[in-house]
Amino acid sequence: QVQLVESGGGLVQAGGSLRLSCAASGRTFIRYGMGWFRQAPGKERDLVAGINWSGDSTWYADSVKGRFTISRDNAKDTVYLQMNSLKPEDTAVYSCAARFGGGTLIPTMSTPQYWGQGIQVTVSS
Image (cartoon, rainbow, N blue to C red):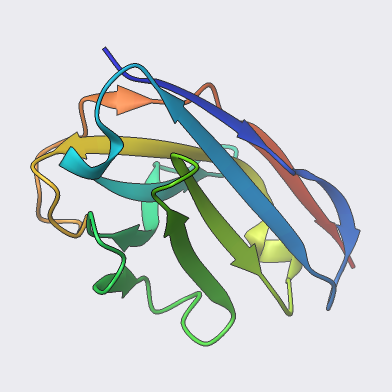
């Protein structure tokens, strides 16, 4: 079992920045590829960024490329999502997820086994 706890969400004006953190516990962190998903009201949950076990391979949705950066600190069992130049359309509940195997999370992969509880990010115009 892997427990994931997100932090760092909140309300920010358009153009601003937020940094989300996801602290993992319970199993060997480096065995898991990690990702950040988001779900806006009335929409499906989508993967926005993924990273492999070592941090040297990442994937981004087109909508966030150049604005968001995913990273991980394996010494702290934590994955981050730095979000810059935020837009109102980035408003959503953001959740981190862990998938056993260590590969970079991409949309064609099977659903991750473990999820955080989600955290609200609201971008005002």
